[in-house]
Image 1 (cartoon, helix red, strand yellow):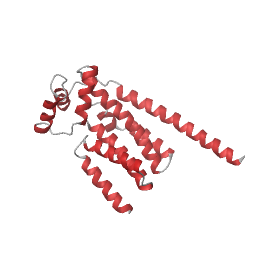
Image 2 (cartoon, helix red, strand yellow; image 1 turned 135 degrees about the vertical axis):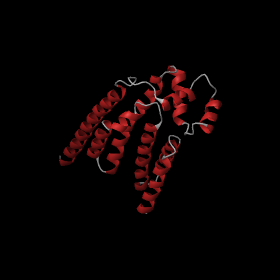
Image 3 (tube, rainbow, N blue to C red; image 1 turned 180 degrees about the horizontal axis):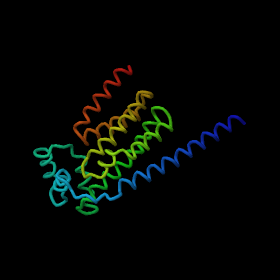
Image 4 (spheres, rainbow, N blue to C red; image 1 turned 90 degrees about the horizontal axis):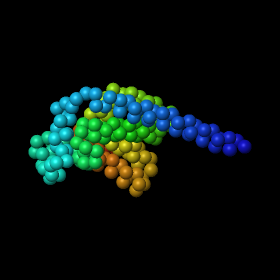
Length: 202
C-alpha cells in the first residue's frame, strides 16, 4: 500500500508541475505577443528586413552576411522562410523571436529540473518568464533570443551527458551547441565555459 501511495503522490506532483508549467508558458507567450508591433523597427531590425528580403537571392543574402553585416546566418535563414510563408513584415520576423523566447522558458525549466528538481525548474521558468531582457529580445527581429534558447539546451544536454555518457546525449549536445554557434558569435564564450566545467568535472 505504501508503494502505491508513493506512486500516486509522485503522479500527483508531476501533474501539478505540468499544470503550473503550462500556465507559465501561456503567460510567457501572451507577454511576448503583447504589443509585439507597438514599436517601429530600429536600425538592426531594418538590417534583418533587408538581408532576409525574399525578393533577393539566397546567395546574395549569404554574401552580404559575409562581407557587410557579419553575423551567423541561422536567424536570417528563419526570417527568410517566415517572410516567404507569411509575408515580408516586421511581425513575421518578430514572431520567430516571440516563439523562441517562449520555448526558452520551457528549456530553462528542463535545465533547472535536471540540475536539482521540478521546483527549481518552475522557479527558473517563472523568473525567466518575466525577465526584462528575455522579454525585450523576444520582441526583437534579431537572433539574440535564439542564442539564449540554444545555450540553455546546450547546458541541459551537457549536464545529461556528464551524468550519462550516451550517444543520444552526445548527439543532442553537439546539435544544440552547433545551433548556438550559428546564432551568435559570442556563443564561443559559452562553449569555453562548458569546457572549463568539463575539466573541473573530471
